[in-house]
Image (cartoon, rainbow, N blue to C red; front, top):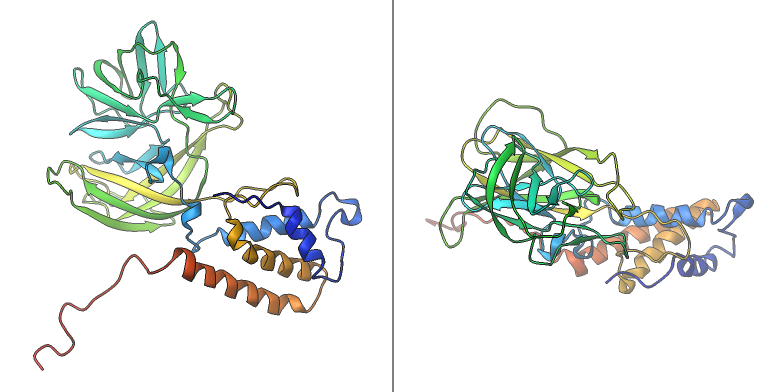
Length: 344
């Protein structure tokens, strides 16, 4: 669960460890350097390769970072927003954000905009997941639970290359996807044989890389990268910040075989703005690591020679937490095909 401890509580402790040196409002600058020290430490403990269960994205309580989508023949780049439309046996596509009118209901007809060329046809049954609006009371995205949106419909028309319509009894209004605003770094990607009818469909991991070039080779992809993002130019009603569309690239170019892709990621750290803020996703029972990190940065600020050795202690504590808390064993292990003494 998120922390209940404030930044100020840690700064107060650390002040006793740096001979009472002032860490706030130095030279009249409010909250500094304490606030920057806390941000620096928090950002470091959540960066790659530090993988934490408590910092994993869990979209729509599915246990997945990004909702699955399917490849399309010869399409290399895909925009993702975390609300999906699926026609079973055809494919899964992410739809546009709320601000861009991803799902608009007017006089009993809904129009949906997809982020990839629409592969659906008139008469097919399409099912939606995680479509919603931003709440007026919390300013947060809330998936519709009326049963009139996140359900199945029969497609009436293909309105354009990236839109389709159907009859809908939901209240008139603009709905859509939340966007993906919190990607820190990508942990992994797995591909599933979408059209396979086995009880357990074949699944395999592919390599996650920093960047991939445009390609012309066509075959099942074995690499993926988070290439770029596009920020909405406007905010949806009751939305505090614009939504982001995340674009991913496969390599090589997917063939006509349809793969379902699932991406897990670690969330980017929040930026603290006040010493009354709490330590975000970092668990209170592991706050000893944070205290050590803040102590190290504070010693460095006051030019105390202990800073170097204290940073080594910080790294040791961080590695201890990785070993005992979240990284019990690597997920991938290599074994020999045959015993070492085979034939002997």
